Amino acid sequence: MENYIKIIEEYRKTQNNNLLTVFACKSNNEEQPEELRDQNYWPRVRLIKTLWENYTAADKPLLKWLIKEEVKAQQECMMPVYALDITAYMLYKYMDLSDVFDLFLAKFASSNEFYLDIELVFGYNRVETKHYLQTEGADQPYAKDILRTIESYEDALSQGAIYKDRDAYMKYFEERKIKILFNELENAKAFYKE
Image (cartoon, rainbow, N blue to C red; front, side, top):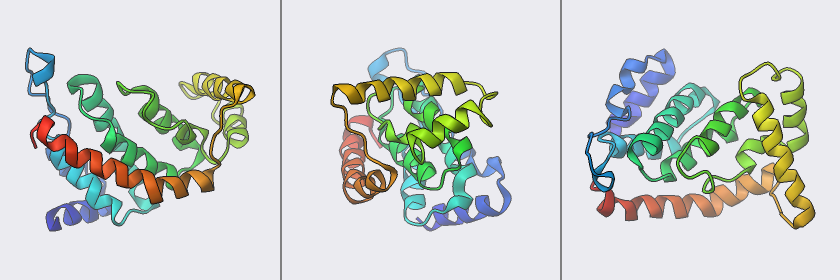
């Protein structure tokens, strides 16, 4: 764990992606889908778990890099979504409105879009995020897609859907969901051969 702390601290200072090469998604190139694995998944999970213990807004560049690697692990190696969920939440906690694009990627670019909560894409709140996507963020790729997504989830409110506001979602994640995710990662070790 000490090595992971040192890597995190050094990355905070330098943002040198060369420090992270041992954590990058690396397929074992198996022909059979059930044998396809990311060779660096478990080291990356340990890095994410170490980061969870002490992360700040200064870690956003690292979190965005980790999200991209987790999405790649989902798409190319069919790895579990639990570490992606944790990483996306850490970014959400310290997000600026412009981070909605990375959170949208985390939710919808992975192989299991139904697992990550839509509250991540709502950002601070749906109204503020929609306003941002219609103004300052309007020229960004996927702005219209994110806007349509939020509006479609809002349409579900009339059918009884219930969404948590930011404070309630953060409380839920930090008091309940994180325990479930850490437990699921432990259970996945046997199947995914740590």
